[in-house]
Amino acid sequence: MNQMVDLVPMALWLVGAGVAGGLMAGLLGVGGGIVMVPVMATVFQLMGLPTEIIMHMAVATSLAVIVPTGLSSARSHAKRGAVAKDLLVLWAPAMVIASFIGGISAGFYSAFVLRIIFGVMAFFIAINSVVPLQKKLMEGLSASPITHRLSAAFIGYISSLMGIGGGSLSVPTMTVLGTPVHTAVGTSSALGVFIALPAAIGFIISGWGVAGLPAYSIGYISLPAMAALAVGAIMFAPVGAFIAHKLSAVLLKRVLAIYLLIVGTRMIIQALFG
Image (cartoon, rainbow, N blue to C red; front, side, top):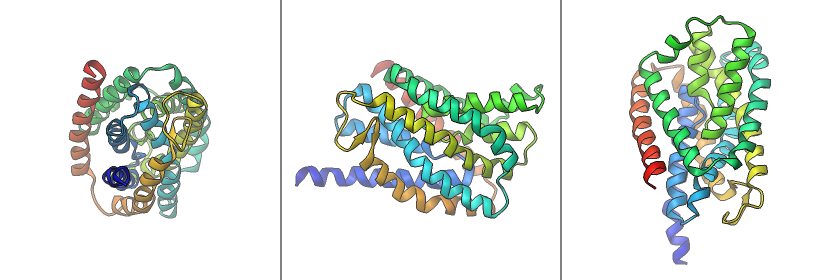
């Protein structure tokens, strides 16, 4: 009974992370994993799971949640005509292949590597959301099909290792390559599914039979954590999408940037000093 009581606050934290992730997914075109992964990593640590699998499970479970979240958010954006089918055709194949490879290769990476990747990329995303860093890096590139495909492959691979839907990278990339921001946000929500599903399958394969996994896990995916997160995420992704078409997201992007700087710093410190 005491164990059940102790699990209640953790379940509430996971539901709360799902709510925040769902709002972010709809509002900013990100998959919500940028919020959910750090919370899950902390919850799994409090549950006493082995250190070497905590990040793998947080990333994999986040990806599993992003599949229904992305579908819910994409439907909301599609109703407003904000999903570009031509971009989906151009980006999706490269993302599917790269993200699946990412999920498989994650089994060869240590928790240290995953934390460093998450922390460094969180810094980049935070800076890029305030200063047009990515625009300066890519402004000399042409908006050719090969540029789109290479960008999609890179974003798919990195996103699969972070447990995110890739929106925080794909939205600014699409806008740099000439896509209107609302279309980029809506299309990114759909593309998050093409990242999350193959990556999650990769994590199932790479985590199959790994020692120390908790009960009710499929590979690195925790089904109870997935369910708790999904409750909030699926319900609030359409709310975020609705708000995105009503309000400017400048202030929210700055708040997200501060959050990412804090999370990124914490991830790197944990990687370096345990």
